[in-house]
Image 1 (tube, one colour):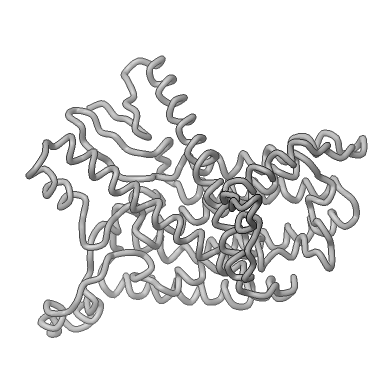
Image 2 (cartoon, one colour; image 1 turned 120 degrees about the vertical axis):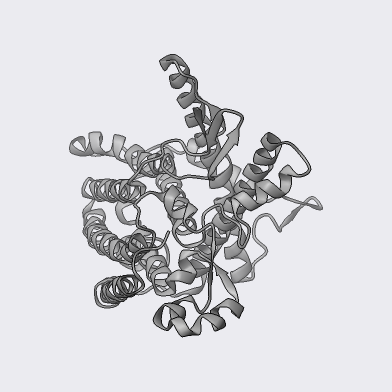
Length: 399
């Protein structure tokens, strides 16, 4: 059976595979850079405007006509292109040239391992919307996140003394956030029994009884479970503390407001990017939005069921649609529904992060470090032990 990815069918010859992968990569770049990033920029400005109670640029009439929301991001892009980059010191010219590109490249490569939907059968061809189905997708994305953090440190070390101080802060927050993220996701790896993001999402395409755990503790309570409500087998319901810890650690790791101690204006204005301007500075902003999207995609896949729909498995949906249309059309409709479900959840998580950014005050650098080492990491270890004990008592991992 031939296989396809990202909506394109890959042929048998090596040349067809090369052209297919190239087309899929271009489609992925167009989706991320042409649609998702502008949507994040629009949501960021819109939500900040609503929270602050201001009309904003788009709400100001010009000649009796209100400017559309897309004018401001377009104007920002043109402004950055028109600015001239700062002339770096001779010792920093090489680093300042390629570090912004590396910071953008790291999250872009991470999107290659994000499964946007499941597998769908079109005759003898199986299509999956993923560029590279990495078996250890979680570790792959974590490794790329570490590379991006290292590039941020390099960017600061090539700057002035404030930028170097910000680089040290970035290294500390990056290490703390990565460690907290790793321990926060470990219970979910035990539950699903896999490092593959696609397998973790497919494992959530089911339901579980609300009192199922008590049924495992006491088989005599089976009658209560049979009549009890069912919940989607999403990670957020299987392990709510892990979701809270993962979201908190991710906010610290991304270094976005309110956890932006590396470029706090009252202390080290500009941070690691203080010696950058023009297009290079725009690449830093692009990387921040890409990291937000990538982290949100991880949250959706691990805790919110990925592309799955609550109480409606892929098999049930395809069978129901197949009664009215053919099997190929039914799989195509199911693919569209699942893509819409994934993007709806993704946009919801992005808005949640933006709300956290707009609502919470900025803690000091020391408090952010304490949050990781004294709260998130110990709580994640406790959650890991409780999850391992519960799985051992029940008799194995889920999925």
